Length: 251
Ligand SMILES: Nc1ncnc2c1ncn2[C@@H]1O[C@H](COP(=O)(O)OP(=O)(O)OP(=O)(O)O)[C@@H](O)[C@H]1O
Ligand SMILES: [Mg+2]
Image (cartoon, rainbow, N blue to C red; front, side, top):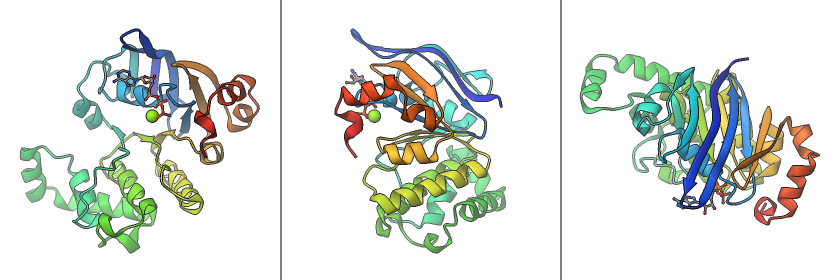
């Protein structure tokens, strides 16, 4: 399996603090990789760095192309997309309309051209995503009227319709109860079945250990373990990092 994302020595410095310190991480194609670590370990900073939101050093190969130093929208256009904790949905238009907007990856000129030229292609992609995530029942609802679980799923669906190769999820289960979390976990596996790779950051250890193919663990900006859920569950460095902080014990 080749890597869709490969970082080598990725480092982000905030003054005297190395929030990410030489992180070398691979997400293989078709893989759901978990990125975990106690509070302040550098997980969000890592996502910000590879999506172009904070400056970094090292290498970031996405789909075999060096993207370090690119502006965020250029990276997103290549198919590396993230969801936001704040979700960034249009709350008062339908779920379908939210997906259509995401599917056109708008620039104003492209929006006009897409509207007249390829709106059928957009509709087909939206339909495909709705099928893949089995979202038919909420298609005409507005995100503002949906449960938190469904709103998170619309965020994931937006990344899917945008033709992503890799989706980065920063704490998608935050604010979800146990049954919504296991429902979301099932949906994340459907995303993988759809042929997209996922990097999942979450504090919910149950979710991460259950759903991920492999897990990459960082603490104080550095990699401390990489392995399967079974390996990570019993890894002494990981247990030590979580026992030594309140971060991973939250849920
Ligand atoms: N813009 C910034 N300027 C200065 N320091 C920052 C900045 N952003 C993050 N940090 C620091 O970098 C470190 C890593 O933060 P980050 O938010 O990446 O951690 P995290 O693993 O996502 O934590 P959490 O689990 O709490 O979300 C922390 O010490 C944080 O205080
Ligand atoms: Mg974070």
